[in-house]
Amino acid sequence: MIGKFKGKTITWIIGYHIVKVGINTFYKKHEAVGMEHVPYGEKPIIFASNHQNAFLDPILITVVGPMETYYLTRADIFEKPFLNKLFRSIYMLPIFRQRDGGDPREKNKVTFNECYDLLSENKAIIIFPEGNHSGKKNLRAIKKGLVRIGYGADDKYNGNLDVQIVPVGLNYSSYAGYQSEFLINFGKPIALNDYNEKRKEHENKAVTEITSDIKKGMKQVMIDLKNDHYEAVNEMLYIFPKEIDALSNQKSETLSDKFKAQKVFIDKIENAIEVKPSLGNELDEKVKKIIDFTKENKLKYWLFDKDSYSFGAVLLAVLGLIIGLPLHVYGVLNNYIPYKLPVWFVNSKIKDVTFHGSFKMALGVVFFGLFWVIQTVVVALLTDDYIWVLYLLSLPLSAIFSWEYWKLFLKVLGKIKYNKLRRTSEMKEVKEVKNQLAQMIKTL
Image (cartoon, rainbow, N blue to C red; front, side, top):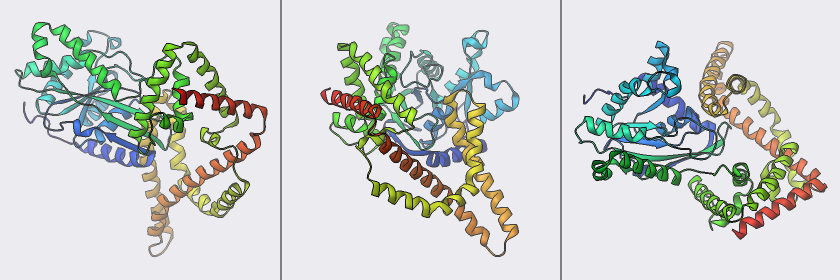
């Protein structure tokens, strides 16, 4: 069986590069930490990851690593022959669930055998032990099948495999938002061989203990919020970034720093709620007041960092917008359609928001590339010399300029709205609530 899996397919290579481009354009910032823990190519690897963002989760784990990675996904999408061939060419393997009908254990034998063979060649497999995806930042109950696959591979190859289960934490600032952030945390591997003696004594107990250790490992590398008062605690991560940094005596220079600070805050706030349950209800009420006010007035949380914004600074920004308007119009005319088409398609056709990020990113790369080529060909046919070269170079530059221009416009608009509202009783009440919560964080 050695050598059965020959490496990268054309489909995988194309998809890989689309995602690579997409990551660097769709996301404002991204990091992968802990990769020194992962024995790529040296030992068989099973990545045990939380599952929050549908297609993007396995793709991002794959592209940050140095080798192709296989992953299990629901079997119903493999039903049509063309799709079955396509999905397998990008290293997706079907996994049958109870809801698919029949005996899933019997149906999954073929897939499990493929997994055993992959592991025998020191390949990597991604498994989401929660069983399905969820848009919430918490770890749900995990299934034992992951451990069974590892032991199945070891048994098939006479105990000669040293299967490593690597906990993975996927942490997104927003699942679907353009210019959001994501952090991938790789935890320390859990070696199945370390549990061999316990397995000899009682296999089910060993599997249960390993599953528990995997869950602990996953909790360490991801944001794991309790369901009680979830919205309030989660929103506080965005309302009070500076206070949360101060709580852990650091300034978040990296996404990893921010993650560590957030973990400290979550641990402290959830412990405080456990000691004093009424605090949770108080947080719910106060955070909701801030959320409702900012949504109603279309304000961003960062605006509350200041009492007001100076007239001179706002006027200077407005003058900059006026001067840059012609370039912005040029950028919009040349880039609006490839930008808007993926957004329209996703918002109107894809109901599950956890799929939005993956579709927007992939379609954005494809549509921008396609439209830029078509537009450049048209310009080349209608002009002389090498004007088309300058035009082609201007397309990505004008797209970036227009996006930055639009962000500046929204910031200026936000500051003007904020200044208008700052003397109202509603604003004063919200600011007082925010100050009370900030003070409460300090006392944690």
